[in-house]
Image 1 (cartoon, rainbow, N blue to C red):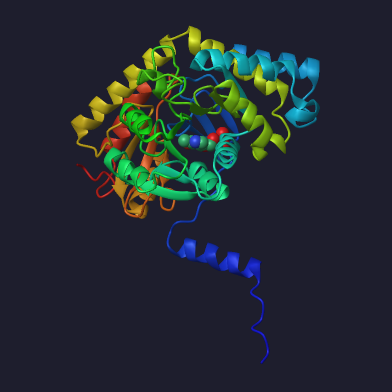
Image 2: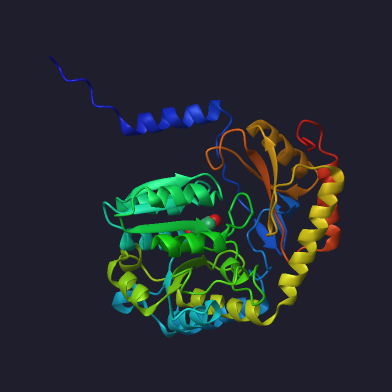
Length: 398
Ligand SMILES: Cc1ncc(COP(=O)(O)O)c(C=O)c1O
């Protein structure tokens, strides 16, 4: 009997893309021609953006730009190598020291992206036969990291500490990691960190927090959701955060004990086998860390804008999710409703991301509105006016 013809991988991919298109779920790339604070030029139009993760407005801060330029002038652009060969420069070392001090950890280790940091931590810590317990709404890279590690992955319903406890208790023989976003990237709410920390202590599990969206924004010193929850390195021994959000740069780090960082240096493949971030970027991130630490007025201003937005949205009866962070999603349900709403806002000169499945569960499409200290009160009011004028069902008043 003749063997069935071998499936063609590119054909199969094209079929999946076509299926996504017919379900109205195709992702489309948009080229931004120019960015100026929260303003974005796109297709020749100037739009007011409520979709970036530049929560403190540091991406274009003169001191951050000057640090980048100075080191690029002195050292060139590329790091020219992996950290463990000759890519680890004085700028990386200084940034790691500052990040460790800021987060109250003994050491920190830089990664080129947050995605790689999470893959690296989970792959280095976990082995086949171990247990990895995660919130269902964790970022994709935490889930991918667990899969890469070969550990058994159990996902508990969002923020459900009792369910997490049951999952940990189901395998008391196994080494276990509980990993959670600190601030959830598509919902903006904060994980129940104190309860999760107590659970991990009881169950002898290791707690890892991905604070990509909390660092710089939450906590009195901007130390993030873990600082805001009053937790230290004993309760949260593995802390990861990114440099591409509130710090306005790119890259990420893991902070923790000397043993954790030494171990990651030996075993985290996405750390070992990749080019170190450009030293100029590390210098820019250090300038951003210094600003985020020293100048709390940006956090205060962002907090006031969040409050203003939530109050206005409540008055309009908009279906806001419970979030105290810079991420303020409006859940609209249907993917088409989210797209229609984003399009209607764009016609009024505002750029807001429509987030659809599979990034969020089916039936939970939303506008992911993000606020920044770079916005003004008038701009937040402009957004509220535009939201008020959205036609039903896009407005989906709650
Ligand atoms: C919670 C969370 N973790 C990790 C990442 C990945 O970070 P990076 O963009 O640096 O790869 C993101 C978003 O990008 C995120 O939202």
